[in-house]
Length: 145
Image (cartoon, rainbow, N blue to C red; front, side):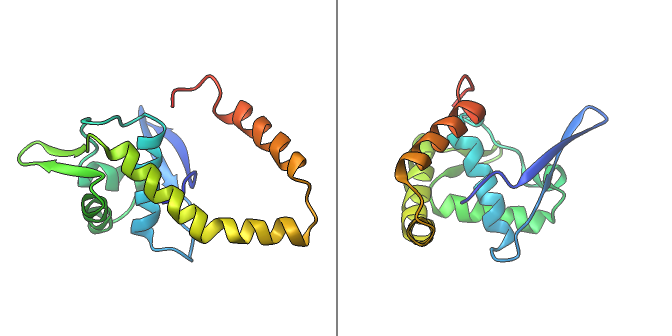
């Protein structure tokens, strides 16, 4: 469940997110990353109703069946749940489940490649720390998490 792969545009007062899908990962997983990012950033807190299949498909300009597959995946991960007749909601521990899943995935899949590049390019860990602090300040400090 990666993130940050969309651009927002305003059309007739609506925000339309145009996802920039990668070829190396299933689209439903990329949408799951988008949903997860909204949960982790606090935009969709625990017990909040999330967009319907139809609404999210329109918002992201994808097939509703793809969003349905995303929501089924997230329900299986116990990140969201269905209140019959009311829609889908973020699970009470959805934030913790998303964070644990993404953290483990990052550590297992992404971190080894980063370590490899750090080693091959002889990048100083202090430089990475400084850049990370600057990135946080520019992108996340003073924003709701």
